[in-house]
Amino acid sequence: KAGVTQTPRYLIKTRGQQVTLSCSPISGHRSVSWYQQTPGQGLQFLFEYFSETQRNKGNFPGRFSGRQFSNSRSEMNVSTLELGDSALYLCASSFVVAGGSAYEQYFGPGTRLTVT
Amino acid sequence: AQKVTQAQTEISVVEKEDVTLDCVYETRDTTYYLFWYKQPPSGELVFLIRRNSFDEQNEISGRYSWNFQKSTSSFNFTITASQVVDSAVYFCALTTNAGKSTFGDGTTLTVKP
Figure 1 (spheres, rainbow over the protein chains, first blue to last red):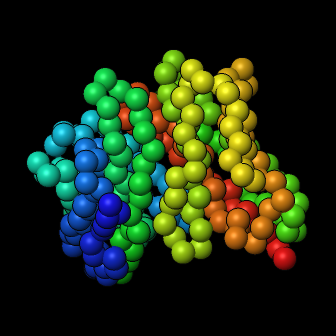
Figure 2: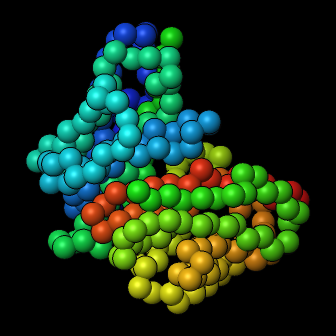
Figure 3: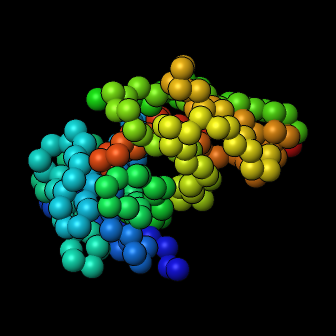
C-alpha cells in the first residue's frame, strides 16, 4: 500500500498570502488529521476529518480551515499568513471502525511552510 | 480537555544502556487509546504501539516494552540495550473514541556509541 502523501513538500509564502496544502491518505483510511509541528510548540492538533465532515478541531484561529473530499483526500488552507505560521504541517490518516475504536495514525512526510 | 505530559525533554544514554521514557496523561473519557510514535532524524513519524484504556496488559516487542498503569495514568516506554539507531524523538499520544488526538511534547533520545 502506498503511504500518506503530502504536496507540496516545501513552500515559501509572504505574510498576508494564503496557502493550500494537500494530503492523500492511505487507501481505505477515512480519517485524516492535520497537525502543526514547531520546535517550540511540539505537535499541535489542528483538525480531523472523517467522511467529509470535520469531526474534531484543535485550538487554532479561524484562518486555519480544511476540507475532505469523497475520496478521503484532504486539503488544509491557511489564510492571511503570519510569520508564526512557519512550521512543518503534518497530515495523518487512520482506519476508523464504525462506533469508535481509534486506530494508529500513519503520517505523511509533511509540508515545510516558511512565511517571510 | 485531555493532556499528555512527557516530562523528559531530552535523554542521553550510552549504547547498551536501558532507558525509560515517561508518559502521563489526563482525560475524562472512560474509553481512550494510547500510542507511542517515533520520529527519527529523517522526519516521518512512525507508529510503535497502541493500547486501549481497558487493556492494561503490558507488552514486549523485542527490545521495546510498554508499561500501562491506569491507576497512575501512565504509559511508559522502555528500550532495553539501546542502540544508536534508537536515537529519535518519541511521542506519546492519546486519542479519544471520538477521534480527537493529543500528543505530548516529545522526548528526544540520543544514544551515543
